[in-house]
Length: 237
Image (cartoon, rainbow, N blue to C red):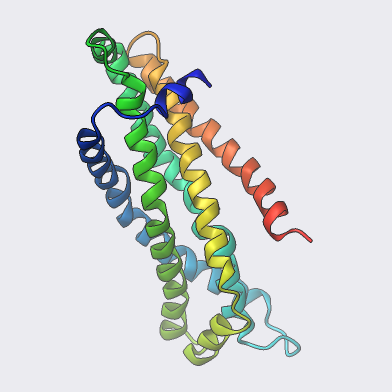
């Protein structure tokens, strides 16, 4: 808690804060686009195949495949599951970077110079990832649904017309906002948890690796727990 109080102090130099935030957006956000796109395409395709294979019944219309695929991607995959994946990439990156700075005494040097090291190092990372995560979610939604389109085009499991009708059927626009809001909370959890473990490392390279692993595990647990709470609060009846 004390670390978060120090982190969310007012920056001493706003120009440096904005520069650092832009660097972190590129490093944590833009560099994650490729893995989000790649995974979303394949997961969207797999969801479409699985649903198509498991609802082959004359009582269930074919467009249900597109409807279910859209709901799964919008409500859970593009926010919760994608953030679990990003916890491994982004979380380990943040924890190992701060841990290395701690064991090499770079953080101590900043403190000696009178700089609030938590604010200087952690705040730009949190702001950058929370601000950019909606972009990753939108890309994930688009390419996830696109993966289903590819299955409709490449196989005879479902026609593109029926898949598209299912994607449009009973669409609730607020689900997109719900998914983006969840992802922003998860982004904060990922970076803040990784920062805590990395910033408080004691020892050497072995402890840096352990902190990185621990941060990913704890982030994943917190994301799943928060997903349950937010789903109940925002969608529960």
